[in-house]
Length: 333
Ligand SMILES: NC(=O)c1ccc[n+]([C@@H]2O[C@H](COP(=O)([O-])OP(=O)(O)OC[C@H]3O[C@@H](n4cnc5c(N)ncnc54)[C@H](O)[C@@H]3O)[C@@H](O)[C@H]2O)c1
Ligand SMILES: O=c1ccn([C@@H]2O[C@H](COP(=O)(O)OP(=O)(O)O[C@H]3O[C@H](CO)[C@H](O)[C@H](O)[C@H]3O)[C@@H](O)[C@H]2O)c(=O)[nH]1
Image (cartoon, rainbow, N blue to C red; front, side, top):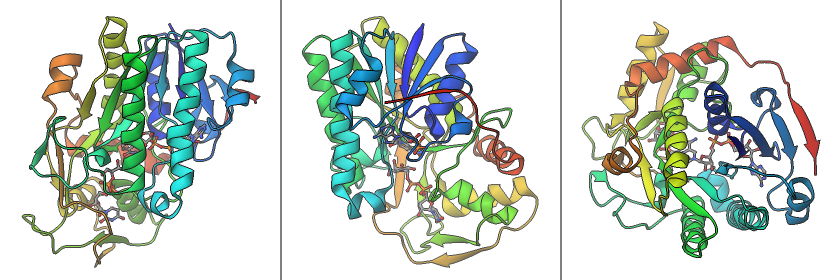
């Protein structure tokens, strides 16, 4: 099978490419390298084009056949989305509409989409099921929800089958430390803690310890990036077997506080990590934990690397190893 992977030079997309290659599928990457990395493309064909450029997409992709599309490419920084809403609506929503147009024109019948827990907004229940109201509290979440609705409508019209995977907190790295997280700027807790530990970043700031949670810091549901990749393969198989549009939570089902994460990071690193307690970060819900039964029941997905320690160990191996060399065949729009 040969799949198109948008955003395949990014953190999660590159791990999905690795998983495809491991099962001897082929991957072609579409990426504009706005946040992706040339070292992450693993020797695969890359079409360097911005999803906002419909003419460029048509020029580079017309006549190509793919068995399905894994759609990761997006802007995904909450703060940036508040400051630049047009950038987010154009990249995430208009870009997806362009992609679906080209998929439709060329008969690529299946799309698995990267959504987010941010579609729920402030949770009304401790564990969030997919039936929880979707009331995003930031532009990023609004655009992801808009894409879910776009996919629902397009798949309802019959030509493209699609589903949406709502990730909670993606973390960790490939088991051989060949790939891992490398956002610039990095906003996520685990890489920030480990960068502080290795001296590659300033001391970690804990964003608030006065929440109504057991230790005062926010609880999140961390899911290993390789477990996310597994879920994508199962979701694509589910579409191939006739599955209709649905959104699935991808998390471990367990919540860890920022302090607990920091403790585990210190255990793995083997020394204290410099940190201070700062103010709350705007837009952080106190608790975000997934109910994961739907993905288990419908996709047959169970996270295999669910322990926080395993996630942090893989991220620490990656942090210590550094970035690999660039490689691959690039065509530009
Ligand atoms: N990292 C997380 O914890 C998390 C959580 C929930 C959802 N997500 C979603 O998962 C997806 C991947 O996230 P990530 O952390 O790997 O991000 P990332 O920034 O590492 O990867 C995104 C990739 O998409 C590319 N891209 C962005 N806009 C593009 C455009 N207009 N045209 C072509 N390529 C474009 C970037 O260059 C990059 O390679 C995103 O859709 C994100 O919203 C991530
Ligand atoms: O330097 C840091 C970074 C984070 N945190 C805290 O650690 C927790 C986790 O923060 P992350 O930034 O790692 O992750 P988020 O929960 O904010 O974001 C995740 O969930 C969001 C949905 O709510 C989006 O989907 C986003 O892409 C995804 O990474 C939060 O309480 C945050 O305040 C810190 O204390 N210090």
